[in-house]
Image (cartoon, rainbow, N blue to C red; front, top):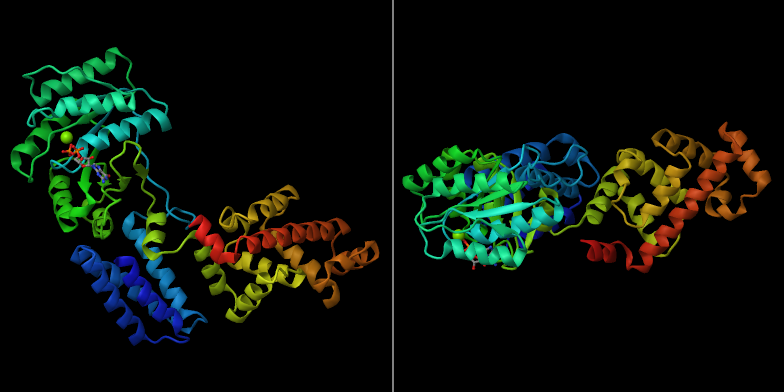
Length: 449
Ligand code: GDP
Ligand code: MG
């Protein structure tokens, strides 16, 4: 699958010390084939490769100490971009939630082909809205084409404990939509979900019906439900719908199946709209908010912790990173290591970057926050460590009152600053021990990835 194919390319890239432009272009050719075989639309794959190539053959990347890892990072970031864009902070991109802030009843209209999972997803979403948003929902089926379609939604409604509009035979979709709105207003419903009829193929009659329903119900969200398993077809369906109805988002169903990933990767480009949720099973709680960052990590088979380690490896010299990793594996972590960590923190964008990335760092971070540490203080800490003797750096327990006073004077700071640093070192050393107990960074990645 896509993950395996990319993994092979990456292993080869990482395995090499130096990279030249030809190596990168060769790797990009392989990635391009992998993307196309995963059903990514051709223009999307082409754009992706162009963007990655341009960034990867930049002089800085190829001349850096870890060119392979940098290329992998570029591919990762571009994947996130392709899946819907990264958050401002450059961390893993957040899911784009539903817009439920309009005046109630907020109308959420579900559209898509027959069998894509619309009715099931309507019920899943109603449950999600009730549980996660604490809002009162009402569901109505506008599917008069398929016998028993309205009953299907009613049955699901009882399962998720969300009301459904009473069924009146002989009404047309637009009339049902009007009645549903009226009923929602009378019952003070927050969110009205409209499950519409599908067709086996996109046809004009269906589009006209969708437009008419949207016309009378003024939906805040128009969500296209597509089956991820249908790959390139899903993309074509999305293209047809997005030209006709004002979509606000996409829900990919059957992501639990053997989806090749292509549908997810092309969807943003083709519709210009975010994937908001992923259906991951037949059960009614099998619905997940779609996080581009996490999905990209999953496709590349790496967790947050792994990317943190990689980022660290890029910003400090490779030998330093290896030495630190070796020492940490032995449970050693002295002030020299702390100094290196502080340098890394500065290079990696400060303390904020590290927040939450390493579970074991949470306590250390809290200790830092408590003692009023911010990025400027990192510089102070470096000054404190620089004023120590090599022996003191290796054995911080030597630091008695007399030594502290000397170091503080040397750094032009107070004894208090020295104490803060020592406390922070203790917390971090403890965190490192914990990481080691959990099987090192690899174990961490497995536990949290
Ligand atoms: P509709 O015709 O678009 O309304 O599709 P339905 O909601 O009736 O779903 C068709 C079938 O797909 C049902 O058997 C669902 O249980 C199944 N289904 C829907 N979503 C998912 C999903 O995310 N994963 C899996 N495995 N099955 C799903
Ligand atoms: Mg249906």
